[in-house]
Length: 467
Image 1 (cartoon, rainbow, N blue to C red):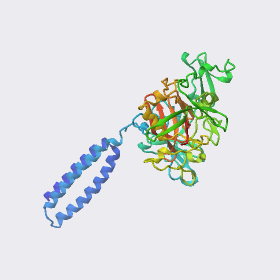
Image 2: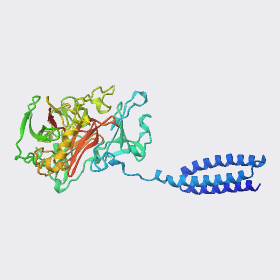
Image 3: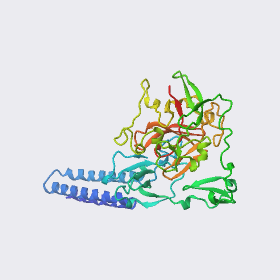
Image 4: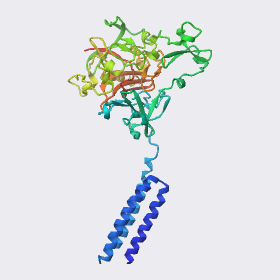
């Protein structure tokens, strides 16, 4: 009987311990209480049976000891789980932990399966750690998604974008739940502008504005019949005139490109590379599904394409693949295209010579070729390979004349990062996400070719002559 009382006292003590932690974590206390009740009555019945049936009286002491141990375990479970409710590390740098980059990426790929009901759901991520703009309104809950989009999401999926292709609705994972992305043009366009912005232009929702007398005025309403060229970049120093350039004419449209030659000691071969961004195709507005022979021009302004900045291409268009390949992995049933990997390389995926949108006899600059630039400059690609125009303002020693041409952001539906980032597609599928690909990111004091980008983003392209 004495042992029986010890058991009852222990269970009461256990109850007090667990209930005290209810104040700390209501959810876990409910779970703990449920476990306690089950444990209490299970052990109580067992101990009573032992006592009444004449079992070894030491059993009671053993049970008391077990209850005490159980209380300690419950204490640890409750105390250690504080991390579940805490704010974890900022997930936006998940594309590259070294740079905090990619307000650009983010980076979207289609999940391996599709949702029920035959509607295709694409998923992706937008990295927003730096200055890339996000959608101005993401307040709508996912309840309108007809069950295709889960209401909750995990911390690792923060900023993942899900798209329902039947309706075009897009949802982003924010703070543990998917919310609908809404665009609001009224919040994007500034009503006033600073004196430093006077005469400059910007484009919002397809409308071009000029800063005039302290206000952003639609170009069509501007007092000037034509926006002054001073609002654009001075391109006189795009190239390094001390470098001996070659020249290539694209027979498809007659466009002439300067080229540079670089010898690679490792492979004992010479790379002939475009010294300017590819500018092939007809301009279409940002967000339009690109097809063969189309491109975006920054700010939907043809001036950028025609004056050295080149076109901005979605990944599928740059690779010469159908647009569906932006949402599914290559070699999938819907995207039967694939890359031809060369032999004789430890990592053949880095040396693919894939023509894509480049002219005949040329291919999309691959990861191995970009790595040579990195090696040649000791990691200072922007300094020694960047044009003096805009943000880089560098030596351009080798004449590559890289320009920070920015990109098209399909999530925020706007252009961004001009004069800040030079971004180039690579002929490589990102393995973990169907709608992402590898890309090169170049900024001042930064070079990375392992970032992933959402395939529907618009990036630049450089071409290299086949060898």
